[in-house]
Length: 138
Length: 114
Image 1 (cartoon, rainbow over the protein chains, first blue to last red):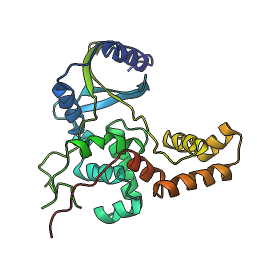
Image 2 (cartoon, chains in turn green, yellow):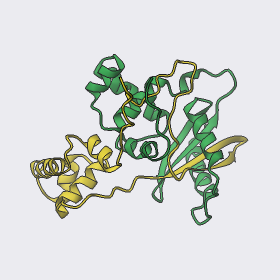
Image 3 (cartoon, rainbow over the protein chains, first blue to last red):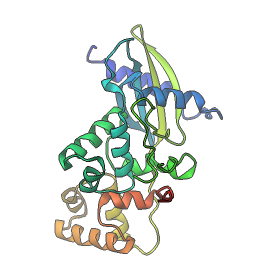
């Protein structure tokens, strides 16, 4: 990738989602892409902030690519626990690992979905409390 | 863990999409990309905090260190720490992440019966 590609990608991303254009009422396509990111079907190339919004730029992974880009179940658990304010010590206990490993797991999960700061996690998971709760464990 | 789906490895991990998520596709140098956008968090502080405490709380939530906040306000790090402690005490939290969770009104899913 040439050095000026990130800048051009950002410019193209900003132009493609012009804030002056009202958003489409159906966000199903956007959720599909988000899910593809979670499942590692696409890889995060760039993430940046502009105009009070977070922009994520992703590219589809080639067929047969390693599943390392996929958000693991452990990573999702760690992100959720941190989002509700759980300390790394307790996360480690819940996930049966060291505190350092819990910290690393949270960081790797954040990196895969373009979260820059853990304080964003409660906001990101905010929709969980409003309309998409995880069902109680059996 | 209450509320966390104990899925086996064959099930997809659950992670809700951010609210206000929008998507588009762009092409650059013969490569195709997806673009996602969602609004960043806008913190609303509850009442009962002084102006200084609100300022400190918002700066810390934005990711600034206590040293950076102290420098910006022309005060000592100790003053910032004391103000932050007051914020934590008033809001019943013990850390920055708990503060963020409290302000995001996260609620744990109901506990399942034993």
